[in-house]
Every structure is written in C-alpha cells, then in structure tokens.
Length: 80
Image 1: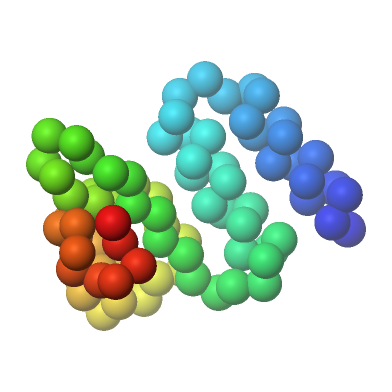
Image 2: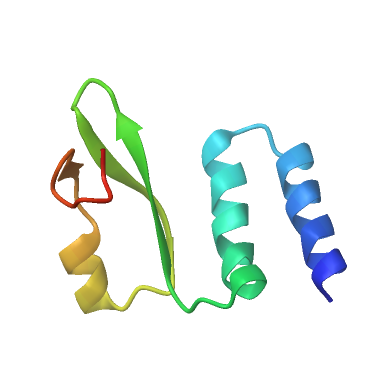
C-alpha cells in the first residue's frame, strides 16, 4: 500500500504546476502516510514576519478557529 501512496505523492508533485495545488495534494495524502488525523501547514511570509496558514486537513471547526491565523516567530519554541 505504501509504494502506491508514494507514487500518488510523486504524481501530484509532477503533474501540478501551482505550489498551492501541490501542497494541497501532499497535505491530503500525508495523513495516510504518517498515520495522523489532522494536519496544518504554515508558510513563512517574509513581508509579514509571520507564519501564515496555507493548507489543512481534518481540523474541526473549533480547532480551525483557534489555529487558522498567523503566528509570529517566537510564539512557540518550535517556531523560528
């Protein structure tokens, strides 16, 4: 099963040209690959000096409301 999933990820990356589409495909496939129920991806915005939400999968409405906003660097120890 895993080789097929890796193949799907490779196909998504190769067949798409828009970064948001590529990341969206990877985010939808990743929970199956690593066994998580929810995932959120933030990208660093140099102009804002913050991590901004980009893609998510499986977030409940309450979690999305709490997490789906910008985070400044240093907000969490794991962030730059």
